[in-house]
Image 1 (cartoon, rainbow over the protein chains, first blue to last red):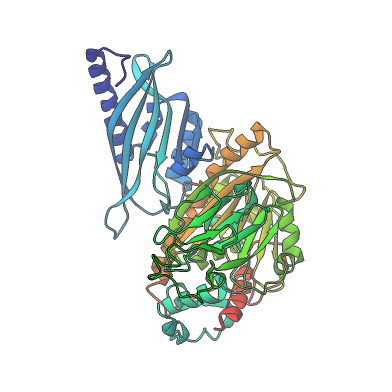
Image 2 (cartoon, rainbow over the protein chains, first blue to last red):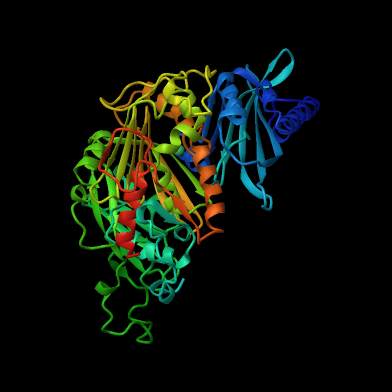
Length: 164
Length: 414
Ligand SMILES: [Fe+2]
């Protein structure tokens, strides 16, 4: 357990972070992608990377976004340019841990799972992994400076269209 | 699938139109799939297996695939590279279960039979029994029970393997026009692996090969590519097919981002589309000719150079209805940090989350859904005629598909 916070501070922060995640996944599950960049700082770094690369220090990610512009381009792809079949995605975030306090904010780790439902199919586990997040505050509100989703699955089930 | 059903096929005749039809039973028939494993992947083919840079030191190994069989690519103490089938000679255990590793020998966990890095059997526990009881018969010859060894070919850091023992030289196999394009990317500079990406697509493996061999779709399906002018039929294009029809390459140059008379049929072109994250696509010219070169090397390798994205896509078959695409993204050891970053950023176009590749993996799944349920029907591939030529200077063609199936039918004897 991190000693950076008093018990009452940690309780408050924990509630705030868990609410952040609940709002974050609701935004994505409900496909309100246009609001998704609001959870990030303008100079954010966001990536989804296979565990094999992450653990070996190989930099190649499945999805790499550097800054808000990259997030907006992903929304353009989802809405306008990519060709893909309809799907539901439902996300779960659990086992949230607050890691440390720094001048810019604090880090958090959590487990995540994402379930995908395709037409005519049973719901399947799409991605399970750990998120390595760095939070900061802008005008009092929590924002992600950095979010790295490291997924365990050896194989991506065909396509990763929506963010995690 | 038993070998009996593989040798007594019951698939229908090929449509009488010949090369300009592809019968849909080729995408779902289990006996045909078994014959493909035998005649194509385990047959007279050089299969891509690994890059030398993945196993730089003696004792390094990488576990990979030829068709649906697991093999190990290993470097021995004398700097020789061996490719061994990952199946213990004793009871068939797939003994190696990690992707990359290092060691001095391989030991099967079941009865601890041990092999050296050349695949020879060097240890059988209790071979002489215990207290003169049990043990192997006196005539048991260790030399007869090594791992199955594949033939190996290497060129400029790329390793190929074959289950066949009498393989032609790799250069002859690729043929001069394909070899020249292979050497354009694999020019002898040391390669640097940037990372891996693996995805499984619910479609027959041939559909993936066909997708790369189909320049006709690029200007229609890929709204991202065509709107940004990255690959368009109204830009200069070049197609090269090797004389046997097996391998092919498609090259193109970047086009202007505007509407013209020539692209008016590209209904999905979005004018004025602009990247907000503009650092993603700031390519630097690396090669003298072409901004894109996509090669299909029979039977399991796709080499992709798209601006500064360099990737090998290895096709791993997973039954008639699914394939794995194993991507190895790479650069050159001489790349500076800026070039590394360019490659990492541009890779957003490729892979399971690629701005371009999503379209392909999704459409291939839709194709399988259609063709698997209608084996009696056939696809129409008449764009640019009924035959094929070794050269074309435009992308409105399906000649690579006709060439592919001419070679496929000859090898498969169908
Ligand atoms: Fe494509």
